[in-house]
Image (cartoon, rainbow, N blue to C red; front, side, top):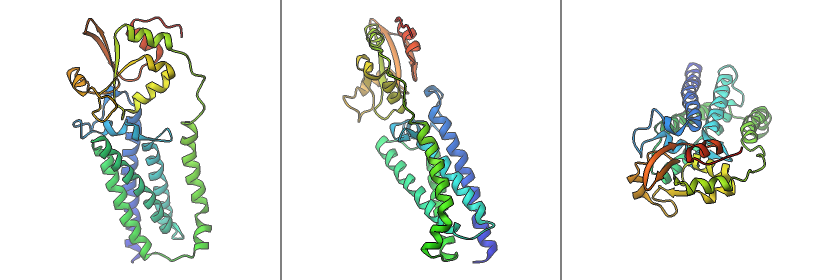
Length: 279
């Protein structure tokens, strides 16, 4: 392969990876955004970035998958940039790194199948990863052949970098939590006052809400809206026009008086339900 062609292929890797990096950063912000804000790629219930990006499958080891995507693209950009000036082992490392990326594609496609929804931006990222894999295969087949010892020696610094970059979010998102506060009186009051939480078993925010309230969540009147969830009440959710989860609805005499979509702190939940809270 001509050197100019090889250089252009590395430039394509960098350009595509920059696009993937920008999309991944957007998905990170979307993961933590308020449920009511939605995403610019929320087209319908089945074509929605938010549906996939805030589901229980959007996290691995408590870390948003999009953050791993950001790390993946950063490493690939660095490898490709170095490869423009130094051949070495990088064409082999780039191929292996793209194979790792292909694993994330399979995982997210599986998640989309389970959720019954497609994330358009995720699909763009998938196309970029597959395209990068094809380019990396071409570079590998036409690149310098190295022995296993040469590869291991040259790859050590990159392996250390990858481990460090991935350990940072893994440690941060898995730090020990503070001692669980007992919210029994609050959650009992919330239910007595007519508040229900409409949720979905695929909803990551719902999961965080349950974890936040701990064992006290058992007193919350939770209504499952997803048809594949446990004891689903899909008809009721449609009747209540539930478009996002969790949705908190306060009813008096079977008449809705107010609602809130999103995560609730103990203080905000107490104010919403008209309960006392000394926190």
